[in-house]
Image (cartoon, rainbow, N blue to C red; front, side, top):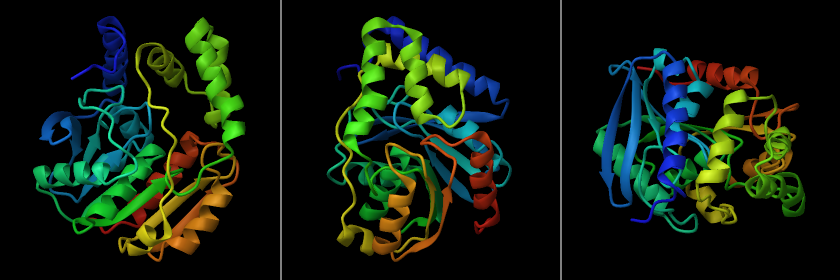
Length: 289
C-alpha cells in the first residue's frame, strides 16, 4: 500500500505530535487495532467499560487525540472509542475511501461489529459528521443517537471564498514554508488561536498527501430514510459549511432532527467554551447507562 506520508521523517514528526497531544490529556487509555476491509484502524479507548459506548470521529487532517481533547470529560460517563480515520495523518492505515458511495458507512459498521457494542452514541466534527451520516445511511441499527458539530455533507459554502481564504494560503505555505500563511489559514477556520494546531497542521501540510476531493451533500431521499435522532451544532461564520444555511436545509431534509443550535460567533472550528457547551449537551441529553 502506498504511504500518504511524503517521507518517513515527516511521518515520525506528525506521529510525535500525536503522542504529545495524547500524553498531555493525562487520561488512562489503551489502543485497539481493528482489521477492516478498508485497512487497519487504530482506536484509542478510554472511560468506563461498564458505561454506554460513544464513538468520537475527528475532522479532516486530524487524529483521535484531538477529538478526545475537544470533549475532555466524556470519558467520565461514557466508554469512549476515539477513531483514527483512515487515510488521515494518524495511526490508522488504508487508502482514501470514496465519499460518493457507502464505503465510510460500511467501514464504520465493521468497526462497531468488531467492538461488539450496541446502542452506540456517535459524535463527530466536520468530516467526522459526513462519516457519521454515511454510517446511518448504510446501517443505523446499532446507533442510538448522533451529535454533529459543523458537519460536512449537509451543505457547502461558497467555493470561491474558500479558495481565496483557505486553500490558497495553505498552498502558499506548502510552497514557501512561511508561517504567516498557516496563521492566515487558521484565522479563517479557527474561532480562537490554537498553538497545537499551528504545529500539527504545519507538519501535515508539508509531509502528508491531503485529499482535496470536493465534498458531496446528502440527497433528500437518503436524509429522509434516517431514523436515528440527530442533534446538530452549526457555526454561523463557517466558510466551509455555513451554519445558517445548514440549519435551514437540515430542518427540511432530516425528519429525525431532534434539536439544533447555531453558534453565532463561531467559525468552522469552535472555541473551547463552545465545545464544552456541546459536551455538556451530550452528557445531559444522552441515555446513559
